Image (tube, rainbow, N blue to C red; front, top):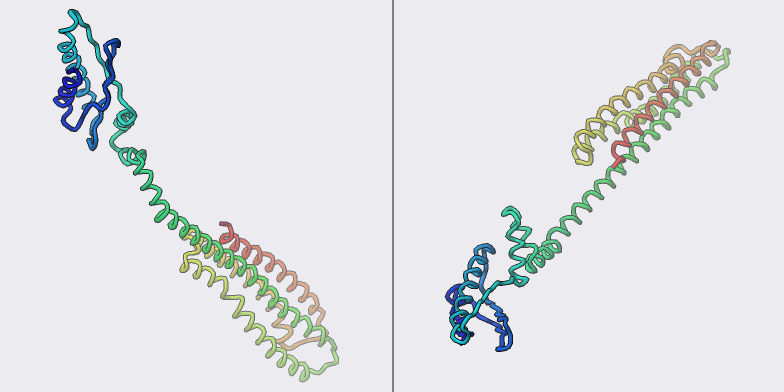
Length: 299
């Protein structure tokens, strides 16, 4: 009779989805333990459900008093309820702000499984793709940086070949007894060779640093700020390169363009000054090229 009355009170207070799954009591015990469970019922609000349970305990206490009152003249009954893990979890989740519902969902087994699926099928491949793109971008930046240094060294080689050619012309034509007709012919032949060398030097030396600036911007291997910096360095490099060619001009005019004088005491002095100016300009130019390379190789 007690179990029937308790079951009726549960149905009236909580609904037909709930039932007494376990009831423990005996004539020798002063405690009655009832375990209430439900299948398929979703509790949306812990506080609201707790209020219903408080009313249920009060109703069960009244029912128990009525049932037991006939056998015992004076019966004092108290009651309380304890939540099991499912309700405890719901209570904890209900204390989190509404903006954290997504995180609440991740605390559930299904939510954790869903997160694992996203990491495996979407996020991990995306991170791998980003990593591969960054790696390829870095490799391309390093290639361009190495090319900058190599091109600057190639410019050095061509410049010193031009300087050596002029110096050798002076060494091969230092006899004051040579006639002007012979010297003019020698100058003419030397100019042809020198011009070919200079055109080859010009095609290599005057364009590559501007190409670095434009290609790094168009291919997006450099940020806008890096591209601006490379542009500034390219202009400085061009100025230093102009100083190098002007050092050659100091020898071009007296040795190959104007009437050559083998016995002019200024010839050797001109070579010394031109070589010194070329070395200074070369040092400046290579320093600028290294700075340009470091912009791209820095990260």
